[in-house]
Length: 200
Image (cartoon, rainbow, N blue to C red; front, side, top):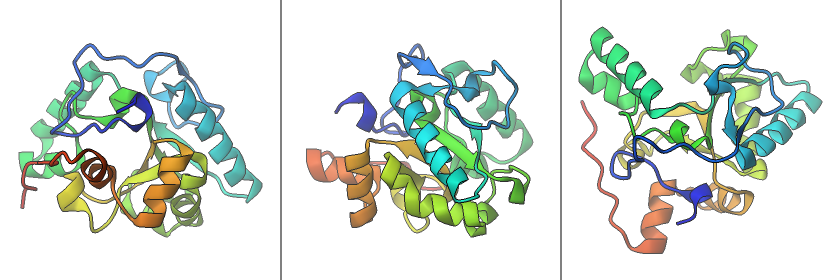
């Protein structure tokens, strides 16, 4: 499967030394310091994100990028820090283990807005920005990667803030069918997608 539609999850990890080619900073507001790696995205995702955010601005909506690219090393730091703060079962619902994060591909972007103080929270879904993003992201090649009701399939809790670039054609197809990326891969490759049972 080509890079832009690559499935990354616990069953499909990336090598520790994987770094996407052509990382660049999209023309979007970021709640991150200048020069930080999380302001970067793979070039196709960066261009699409710039168009997505521009369209939102034209609707007088204020989207803010929170986190784009994340290296294996940085993901490892985050995972270990969260484990020190709370239970492993809770952490595994929200935080990918090193090598299993879509952020390492440079194709994923966490998004928020000032109405929720630019936090990554489920209440983002109820804001005008969150509602607009859910409806319009596929037009720019993005999907809401971890939708509500699909937790047993994706292996993660609902995250209305996490979008993933998969190309416009695939994003529109997934939006129309309601399939997750896992279900799409299984449908088109015949591969059984086996994830660990979600923690209780």
